[in-house]
Amino acid sequence: MNAARHGLTIEKSLFTRLVGELARRGTGERETGAFLLARAGHPQSESRRPQVVVVAYYDDLDPRCLTGGITFTADGYTALASLCRRDGLQVVADIHTHPRRNVRQSPTDADHPMRAMPGHIALIAPCYASGVTSPADLGVHVLRAGGQWQSAYGPDAARVVQLTSPRSAASRLQAVARWLHSLTRTRRT
Image 1: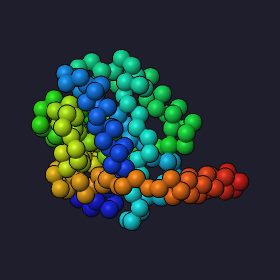
Image 2: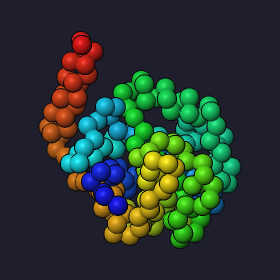
Image 3: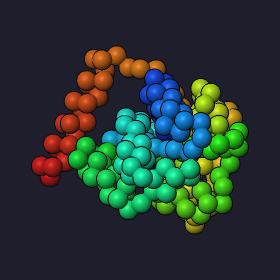
Image 4: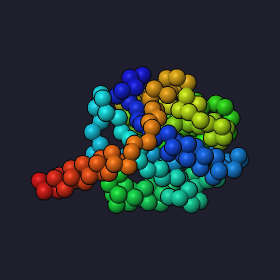
């Protein structure tokens, strides 16, 4: 798998909060999940991967979706679209939990992706996310053109989903200022 073309980055602290929250919401007895969001219009190229900046949990978007498995409805997708429009975000991946160590896609996962767009990344966390400390613990599945999936595990998964160190407050403010400037420049044209 070409990790530079099909991958994402996430700050280590956000990743830690994400898997901790998935474990908490699943209470060790049910699957749960979330969408991973980046700024809309993020330049995706060979050298720049989308940076996850927001996590939207399935049950915050669709409160009745955690049924043991996940039954995410149109109401949840409507809430997700509203959030993305309001905050200038885009979905770059999703993550959900499985009950055991298996992080391979089930036939249901493969046949019914949360976002059926080529390049979408579907992550699977084992053991209801309990004990997950690194992307190497996940199954990483990239949807290719034609509906085929390409999967990565262990060290290959960690090359696709890369953790970053927190940036300084000053560099974050500079990044936000550049992003806001690009939005105002785009709206003027």
